[in-house]
Length: 257
Image (cartoon, rainbow, N blue to C red):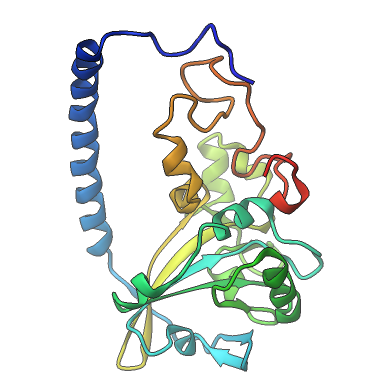
């Protein structure tokens, strides 16, 4: 529902152009900042992966190196789908809906996959139901998810969320300290050099929201994402479809799709 009392002011084309040019300066500043951050990301050191992780996929059991498909770079979605679940996380599904043909990545020497702890048979059946075609592998039975903080279980490994331990989160007053368990969404990147695999980057939580394809489009609109936290307040009724929201549903269960 739209609050028609809180829509943008109606002005002349000349006034709109003046306001748009002011915003353009902010956009240019943000672009330059993002370029600097991306450069620093590429300057991060990397960690050699020595543990022999294995994954189950359409051809059987494969190694982490196999996931590269003979390309030098690998981008991996840590996709929330626990072994006991019948469906994936709805927020992860919203990101997966935006993964289309991968040829542009392949042309740039990069492979994209998703990895979850659920058995491969569950993943394959769910992918068929949702119409997804990206490579999706199971890490069931390995330490992979725990080592990369995509599954949090203090019985297996020390919990860490957003690169902070529980003690660090408590000191920072973060509410995440009380919810450090279960599956977590993220993206990790890897590089392989002459058959050796290196971990180069990971991000979690809101760090992956730009990979939900609908969000950049909605951020260009007057109503925005239609989430409760957005400014200006009261412009649109919150849809409760915010990534991570408890009421978010798979869209094949949702009559809004």
